[in-house]
Image 1 (tube, rainbow, N blue to C red):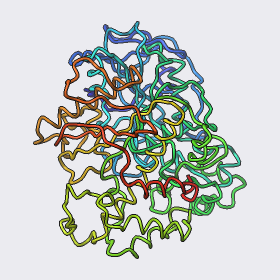
Image 2 (image 1 turned 90 degrees about the horizontal axis):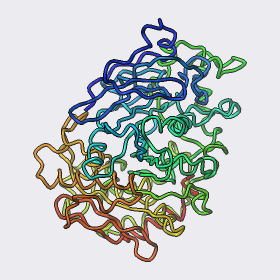
Image 3 (image 1 turned 60 degrees about the vertical axis):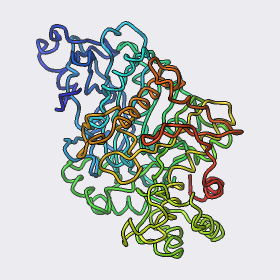
Image 4 (image 1 turned 180 degrees about the vertical axis):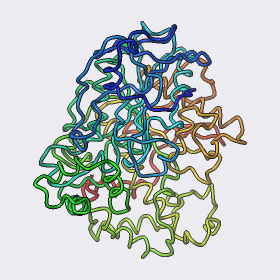
Length: 563
C-alpha cells in the first residue's frame, strides 16, 4: 500500500538545489533513468513493489501556462531526484477533494511496478480518474494501484500501472470565444494526452512495453478514455493498444457544445475578476494571484459546468458521428455500466408523466432541445410500466415503489431507467455495437452487486471491486464490510479479468480461475451479450437486449443530445 501523501517539491526547485542533494539515491532505492534525468522511488517489501510517485510529465501549468495547453518538460539534471511522495491534487470543486491538498502545480503521474521486472517489458495500464471533470485525483486512495499489480503477478500475467492527473473544472475546461481563438480548449484532456505521450517516451525505463499500454477510467475517466479514442477525429497516435471504460463511452454523456455556448459564463467570470475591459481577458485571468482567482471560481456560478466541448480540433465532431463513420482508434475494449446507474442521475419527486416531461424539456443546463416527437416517444416507452423500464428493478424492490419513500414519487423508477440509459447505458450499447460491426473485440458488462453503504447498484459501485480494494481504503464505509465471501470472490474475479485484458487484450483464461466462472463472450451483432458480475448468484452472460426500444430511441437521436 502507498503510505506517503505529501507534495513532491517542484522539480525545477530541486534541480537548481545544491548538487549534493541530487547525486545519490538511498541505498537499495529503485532508480529509473528517464529522458530528462533520473528519479529514485520507494520499494515496498510487503507487496514486493516499487513506487515512483509524483513524477512530473509537464511543466507546471501556472503563470503564463494557466488555462494554456500543457507544455513538455524543458529541463534536465544530473543525479537522481526523489519520486517518493504523491503530488497535490489538481484544484477541483467537489467532495472528492476533501482530505487532499490541492495545487495548480499538479501535472504529475505515479507508477507502480512489481519488483524484479526492471529489465522486463511489461504491459501497462494507465488509470484516468473520474469526478465529473471537476473533482477527483490520482492520489485518491480508492484508486490504489497496488492490488491490481499484485493480482497480475499472482496469475502469472505481470503488468505495471500508472495513474495520471489532469486539470479540472475551470482550470482544465475554461471556454469562451477568446479561449477558442487562442486554441486553448479542452486543456484537461490535452493533459492526459501529454501524459500518454510521456509514457511512450519514458515507459521503457520503468520496464514497461510502450506498445502494450491500455488506458482505463471510470465515469469522467471513462469519458476521457472515449475522448482519447476519438481525439483529433480518431487519429491513431499509437499511444495505447486497448481501452477500458467503466460507466463512460466514446459517445459523451454530456452535451458537447461549442465555445459560443460558454461565452456568456466566460464574460461573467472575467467581469467578476475585474478583467472584463482588458485587452486580453485571458492574460488578465492568468495574472491574478491564485487566492484571488480561486475565491471567484469557488462559487456556484463559476466552479462547475465547464466540460469538454466541441472545438473542431481535439473534439472534432460528435462522438456518435465519428463512430458511425469509423473515425476512432480501433483497439479492443472493455465497456460496461451498473444496473442502477439511473438512481445517481434521476431527479426525485417524479409523481406523474408530466414531471418526467418537464425534465426532458428542460434545456437550462443541457444546451440542447429534444423534438416534441422524441419527447413523446420516450415518455410512451419509459412509462409503459414494463418491468424492464423500472430502476431499481422489481427483483430489488418488487412492484411497490413506496419503499423508496414519498420524496421519490411513484414514477421515479421509470425516470431512473431513462436517465441511466440516457447518460451511460445507451451509449455503452451503441459503442459495443459499433466495435462489433467493425470486427474489433468488445467485452461488455453489467455490474450487479450492492456493496456495503449503498442501497442499489448505483454509479461508481464497481470501482472497489475492480481495484480489489478489500480494505476499503479511501471509503467512509468500507464496501466489503460485513459482506459474504461471495463479494470478495467477485472482486477477485473482476480484478483478475481486468488485469488479464491489460496483459492479453482478452479478459479470459488466467491461471487459477475458478472453473465454475463463465467465459466472458466477445460482443457480437448477431448475439449481443454482457457479462453480469454478481455476488448473489454466479456471474453469468446475458443477452444485451433489454429496454431495446427505449435505448434505440436514445441512440438513434444522439445528435439531438449534442453528442
